[in-house]
Length: 164
Image (cartoon, rainbow, N blue to C red; front, top):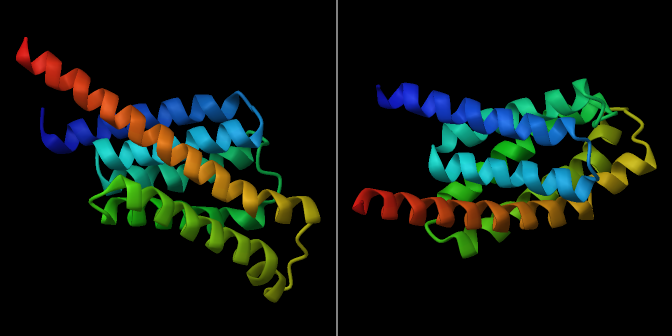
């Protein structure tokens, strides 16, 4: 099997897991953290393309399943997710990469919800602003920690499997 095919299959599997998480419609803290974890896992195990692909599709799916009730945020979430995975992947050390990526995603989404959409003449409900400010920082940080922990567990598992 070619490397590209393996990457595509792994990305599809990670996306499928992410979609299951979204379909469960759990609270934002849980769903957001797990989606961010999948962005980190995709990026860390498959590559930047995987993380960005998952991040591109998740807000669209969130809208289609009724999690995201304010469609004007979709392009801003896509950019926030891409920024998150790109900044995470740009750092060799996850201790720097996760907080850097989380803070920048939070800043981008907060500015988008509070100012950019308003500047475009779109009225953003207070609940949407609330959902796209501090909770984004918390879920991005938690998701990053969960994602890095899963990556480390996978690396240990496969390292042991190779020795057998």
